[in-house]
Amino acid sequence: MLKPFKFSTALVGFALIAAGSAQAAELTKGNPEWKSAGPLAFGPKGLLFLGDSTGASIIAVDTGDTTPDTSGGALKVEGIDEKVAAVLGTTAKGIVIADLAVNPVSGKAYLTVARGKGPDATPVLVRIDRAGKPEVVALENVPFAKAPLPNPPSRDKAKAESITDLAFVDGRVFVAGLSNEEFASRLLSIPYPFSKSGDGTSVEIYHGAHGRFETGSPVRTFTHYKVKGESYLLAAYTCTPLVKLPVAQLKPGQHVKGTTIAELGNRNKPLDLIVYNKDGKDFLLLANSNRGVMKIQTDKVESQEGITSRISGTEGLPYQTIAELQGVTQLDELDKDHALILVQTSAGALNLETIALP
Image (tube, rainbow, N blue to C red; front, side, top):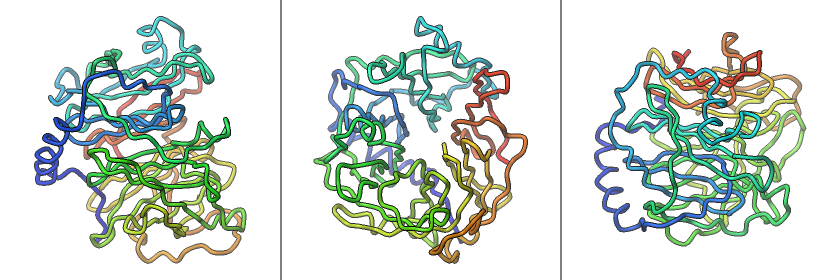
């Protein structure tokens, strides 16, 4: 049976015991010197991981947000960009929302936001309670730890993609992005509490739409998934291969060939990916730049034959496009039945909405 990774009660209990003492020993109060807004992901007990591409590092911050928020019902904020901009003393055109994550303990939403544009933009962390009120989370004199990325890209364009996505799984932070190595696309596995970051794993995939193996395109978004107790990362690339990567092979200095289990259409950039259970079956929900939101079946993740020759159109794992979900730019699981999405309306507004998982 295929199993998505979830914080079960027993696992959370164990994780809180382990991580609670680890956090106390690992984190020190100070200013993490966060330089760029990018991907974010939660660990246990309100621990938040921030990806800093400009600073070429992963920052762990203890948010202290460990109490369930009962201040509101279904979270919905129309014009979330305008409301966040107002808190920051600017306009919606003066900010970029980089990522969205839900704290699984409190149910509050967190956004990484760039105030300004380009390399001089200031990163800001914004928290939104269940009543829809945004507030800035100050990152001064906070408990934090930092892990530098080994061998980050040196070219300016590639620097922005040194971290494209991250996730906390079983005591490790997995980081996707580009490196300064010959095979640029890589995945890092960084144990937490942080120790010295080792070399990453270079990743090679077959891109069916291009008809070739590729090593220079980074993972855009990924999620963790278990197949018969074995851990995998399911990773989506631009234009749009979906690839299965065994976690056991993601070791420092290794070169891994992923298995392309679906081609989901070219001229498209995957934006965000989650796994969920509906009526006893597991599905992936993938938001895309040009191909809408896809609900992807997972029952053949284990047996799906890898794509190893050029194709046109789509192939591999079956999916359906959710017609009613238009303009979704980010998503995260809110609870077992709902997701939280950032959605760009046809009128140009950016809303934060709660939806039932399809």
